[in-house]
Amino acid sequence: MAKIIAVANQKGGVGKTTTAVNLCASVSDLGKKTLLADCDPQGNAGSGMGIDKNRRPNLYDVLVSGEEIRSCVVKTKHGDVIPAGRDLAAAGLELANREKREFVLKDALLKLYMDYDYIFLDCPPSLELLTVNALTCADSVIIPMQCEYYALEGITDLVNSIKMCNKYLNKRLEVEGIVLTMFDPRTNLTNQVAYEIKNYFGDKVYKTVIPRSVRLSEAPSHGEPGVIYDRIGKGSRAYRALAKEVVKRCEGAK
Image (cartoon, rainbow, N blue to C red; front, side):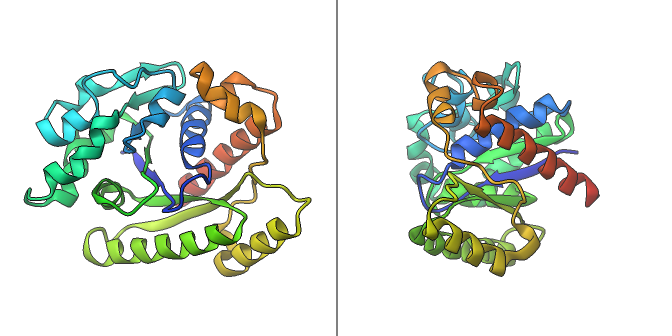
C-alpha cells in the first residue's frame, strides 16, 4: 500500500512544487513506484514533469465530474502524474455543498493505493478545500521551509491546520519532516531561522538542506525535474540525498 505524503506550506514561494516534483523523480529513480498528484490549480507540478497544463482529463474531472482516476494518470520516465489545470480553482466552490466534501480526493485515490509505493500530493499555498482534501487522505506532511521570518509565521499556521485536521478529519496525519529550501548559509538570517526551526522541531528537520540553485529554477521551462535536467548540479544532488533520507525514514517506521 502506498505511503501518501502531502507536500504543503501555507506560504507561497518556498519551493513546495520544486520539492514535490524532484522528490517524486528522485524516489522513482530509487526503484520505487511513485505518483505525483497535482492539487494546485496553477498546475506547475504537472508542467514540471513535462505535461501540458491543458491535458484532459485531469484532477478537476476526477473531483468534480467523477472521472475514472486511472484515465487521468500520465506515465512519465520519472514517475506517474495526475495533472491539474486552472479549472481546478473552481473545484472548491463546486464541491462546497457536497456531502463529505473533505473526503473526495481520498475516495478517488483509494483505487490507486495498491499501485504505488509513494504518492506525493502537491498542495496549494493556502488552507482551502483542496489542501484540506490532501491533508485528509495523507499519511503525513513534508513541509518545505525557506529560512526567512515570514516563513516562520507560515509554518505555525500550517502546523495548527495539521492539528485541526488530525483532530477532526484524519487521526493518523503527522508531520513527516521539515526540509530547508533555498538555503544560503552566508546570511545571518538563514542561520538564525534554521536554528529556531531545528530547536523547535528537532529530529523532524531533515539533515539534507536544499541550496539556492539557478538550474533547479530553469528546469520547469524544459519540462523536466531539476534532478533530470541537471543531474550533477548541487540542487539535484541535494534532492537525491533528501529522497534517500525520506525513504529511509518512511521505511524504517514500518
